[in-house]
Length: 136
View 1 (cartoon, rainbow, N blue to C red):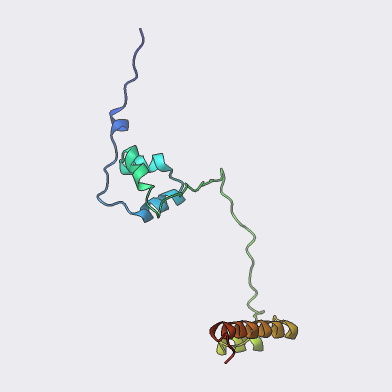
View 2 (cartoon, rainbow, N blue to C red):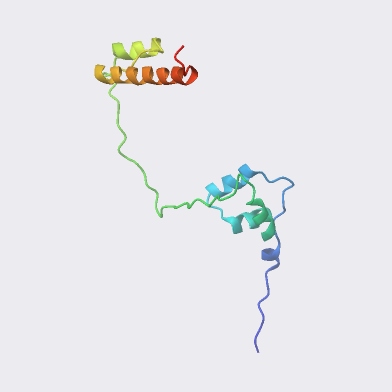
């Protein structure tokens, strides 16, 4: 005699569907590794409802983010200790950068600065030529 499987009553019960489901809730679930089937179960939805939901422009083409969990706890035990007797003193350029918002970073050479200025001048000249084609 072959016996049929009986579904558990608890497994057959769906979760209560909330009154409002937002796109940010669904995006958050996708980022946490919950796929469409999991979202359907979590919110107690029908498969067609999930399909309709993912037709929304904010959710269109969104995929579940794969969350990989390590089988062990990985701990960084190489903490650096700061010697209180050795502190850093801000240099003059750091002070200038903080006080003057127009301070140009010294990381550009004079040649690079000249090239940037030339490019800016060319762009201004091009705009002028476009607005005044007769050079008046």
